[in-house]
Length: 109
Length: 113
Image (cartoon, rainbow over all chains, first blue to last red; front, side, top):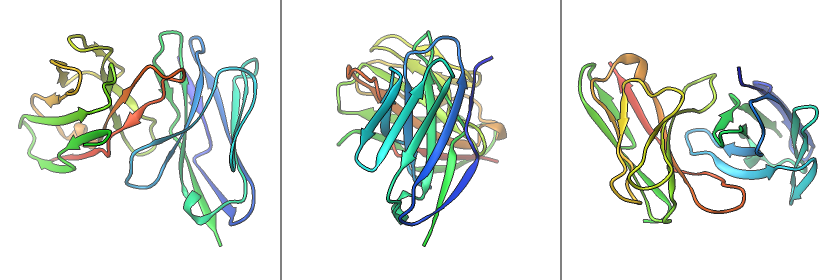
């Protein structure tokens, strides 16, 4: 079966750096997405990786290793507004998105 | 309208009743999707439509139906609601961007008693 694994919850301190990991086992691979979802709101797109390596976008970076079935989302200079759930999703060979359950990130002052 | 609009925002429904969740987008996106989101689970695809006039079944289609009469509208109907359909429902669309990223509506919280 297809599976996306990410930690259920993480806690970090304001101003620090946090890395949220995602491992996947899917039928084929056509890209990996990270979305941010604040409580009670809709998910919003953060990043997309289809080739191995690091994609940097401001304070957020996303890394992909296709051979290891592994990605991480790196958040730098954490702010209180970064408290949210972070969803990892993989597009499989049928171009359907398989979603992880999300990682709830709690930022403490 | 800007982006995707869903209605209603929330609804409490008696089991056995029929319910239609509305979704409208103004981005002229070809593909549209309905997901449900339950605590502890990832988003699960209910139905999708790659273009107007076509629909397909997702991971959890039983008990739901959709139609796509035009590009903008993609309603989701529960013919006879059951308590297990209590969930938050998200409509989404994607265009022709390289990434195929999804744009989500604000969600419809449905409670079936």
